[in-house]
Each structure stands twice: as C-alpha cells, then as structure tokens.
Image (cartoon, rainbow, N blue to C red; front, side):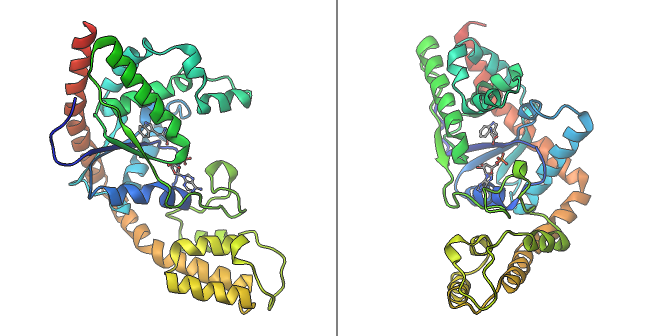
Length: 326
Ligand code: AMP
Ligand code: TRP
C-alpha cells in the first residue's frame, strides 16, 4: 500500500515512563520537533506498551498527560503533527494478534529487550515477550515510511520489516516496509557521573528541571581532582561535554581554551554551565507550566489526534482482515 500524498509518513512512539531528561531531548525529542516540518508526522504515547511496567491507573493517566504536555512544550505543533495515545487506536492489538500467528517463539526470543530481562533473572510477562510484535503493528498500520528512533530500537524496526514481509509472502503484497531513521546527531549524552545519562542510573538531569534542581544537579557532576589553576582536559570532562550541547561554537572554543590554559576551575565551569542550561531551558519550562494548566487543550489535542489516527489505522486493518479471510 503506497500513499500518493507528497510528504512521507513519519511515525514514532514514546513510552510514558517519567520526566524526560536532557539525554532524551538531544538524543530523540528535539528531532521529532525538527522533523515535523518535513514529514507527515504521527507521534504517539505508547500506553499499551507501558502496561508492561506500569500497572496503576492513576500513575498511568498522570504519565500520559505529562508526556503530552512535554511534547507540546517542546514545540510539537498539533496542526502539523498527529499526537495521540496508542490506546486510541486499538486496531494495533488486533493486528498484533494477526502478526503473532505469523512469527515463531524462537524468533521473538532473540529480541534484545527480552533477553536483557531474562539475563537479569526477571520473569518476563507475555506482554514484554510480545513487545516487538505490538511495535510492528504500531509502525505498519499507519503505513509509516520512516521511523526515527535511537540506536537501541533498531532491532525493533527490523522486526517490523520482517513481519511485513512475512505477511506479504503469506497473504499477498499488502504492507510496505518502513525505514529506520537512526538519530545519531548526539550519539550519547553523558550523565552527571559520566556514564550514559539514564533514568535507571540515577545520573540524569531533568529537561524541565527548576532552576534550583538544575543548579543542584550540575554541582554534583563528577569531576577529576585537578586543582585550581592547572590545565583541565576538555576531552574527558563531563562538565565540558554537557556544555557543548548548550553553548554556541564560539563559546565552546573559548571555554576549551580556558580549560587547556588552566584559567578556569570546576566551580566556575559548573556555574557557567547551569546558567547556560537555565537560559536555554527556562522558556521551555515556562511554556510547559502554561500548557499544563490548560488540561482541556491537552485532552482536545490527544482526542483530535486519536480520531485522525483511528481513521488511518482502520483503513489498513480492514485490508488485513480481508486478506486473511476474516
Ligand atoms: P529511554 O528513556 O531509554 O526510553 O529513551 C527514549 C529516547 O531517548 C530513545 O530514543 C533513546 O535513544 C534516547 N536517549 C535516552 N538516553 C539518551 C542519552 N543518554 N543520550 C542520547 N539519547 C538518549
Ligand atoms: N519501543 C519504543 C521505546 O521504548 C517505543 C515504541 C513503541 C515505538 N512503539 C513504537 C517507537 C513504534 C517507534 C515506533 O522507545
């Protein structure tokens, strides 16, 4: 199935699992905002997927609402992007069942996310095991051309392609194959301990942190024990690495010079960093606070997005039903 509309279709899903951090922003979220100009974009909140970890009604509702607010505050424009909840398009669960009957258990056992859990001695739920199949349905039903994701999701896109092929060979040419769009601009944003910034390492800095939170987190960045007045190595310094995300090229060059000549100490570098971060993040934070008070607006955006997505998914599922003989 190919669309004749001028713009290619972009789709991505985001799990509502908590406050986004700076790594999420530079690694993923920012690009969705930029790409909305070029593609017909569908961005959804993966609430069915979140059920694999979140099993509390109020918590889930809260996380979904807040993720929608995050995206709107960052500049996703509801006039350009279809923003919706995965549960607004239950066709994905029907498609996942159809696809389940086409894939084998050993094939799904090779999925990284599943293997990781098993290695950590956790007993996986069927939902977790089936995660890639539901994700394939997410991608194939809206007939996505491109799927922007972090490198960790590459295998999942391959599953979606494999499943589309399997369907086509079994029931006749039906589904087109999506392409991953691997976001590599900012490969890995380091956390305050120098490891990859991650919620699970507790080394993250929230994107919408208050000024006080920002300051406190930046002051806790782990640095070497080089004394004041001595030369610092920008290549290995965590403060410098984060600076690069927020400063202009000229500011970076100047700071690099000051690092090498020993004319800046960590205290000053950290002060500069949190102020610079704050200048960048304050307008986003303000916009977020404003949007969060307008619950009706957020609910309306999600409802309108859900309605539009529903119609598109319904077209595809109708074809699948017909092809399989149901
Ligand atoms: P996660 O929070 O792991 O579900 O990731 C959500 C998105 O943010 C994915 O596209 C990740 O690739 C991206 N991401 C998460 N942590 C980082 C990081 N430290 N640096 C760059 N991108 C990241
Ligand atoms: N698995 C993705 C993540 O953890 C979220 C996701 C669910 C997704 N369905 C998707 C991403 C479809 C892209 C396309 O980040």
